[in-house]
Image 1 (cartoon, rainbow, N blue to C red):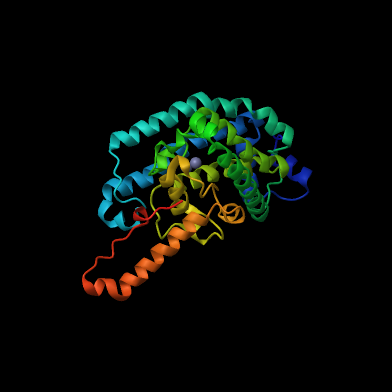
Image 2 (cartoon, protein in one colour):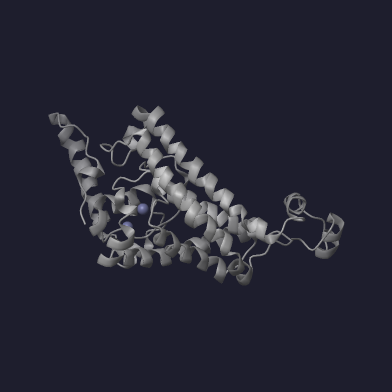
Length: 304
Ligand SMILES: [Zn+2]
Ligand SMILES: [Zn+2]
């Protein structure tokens, strides 16, 4: 809750007029507790888990023909009831694990110093912190994910997430409850090391889940804005990990590609990309003249 009762009081305290964003924030948050503001994450996560995968569902069912060239595993088809069952599992986990975790983790958020006060951070401060959060989470997630692929971790926990060898947007948070809890840790380390404003924290939690949904979408869409982010893995990258399955020792990173590159776990994927490219070039230069169709997809050539 803000320690001011009026905008004038807030302006006197920070020594200047409030910006439009700060006035909006004041009007919205001045009479709400920090705990209540933190709990907004529950609503945001519910909306993100429910709404963002719908975009891919609509593409799948209403634009199937035009979107088919961008489907990473084109032979795999799911029915509406498959989508619904996945969503049901995710919502059960949301009600039993994700929501309660948000409710009880508030003291740690308070302890690390996430603030709700004025002034608001600048756009650049928010962006810089988000980049740091993504990089720290990516590194932590890489090692936890790699550990989950040892025999015990996979059999006891991670197998659930890999039930989808061709992932879909709704399946991004589809996982064993223990995995949901364990992978929450690296998400928290960034804000703990570089604590920011509650708005930055909301953005971080939301964007991380949107990124996971896109990565699991099953579509490598050319207009996806994340394609312009350096070292970004994306859907094709993580789809490869799911396709290879439980024995996969490739593409463990959740967001970027640098960890897999540094630790040598991206070799299988890069080899596959190289061979596919050579096959396509070979077919373009001679194959199609002989009537050989250019229909090679990455699904036909997965190695690990
Ligand atoms: Zn995995
Ligand atoms: Zn996955």
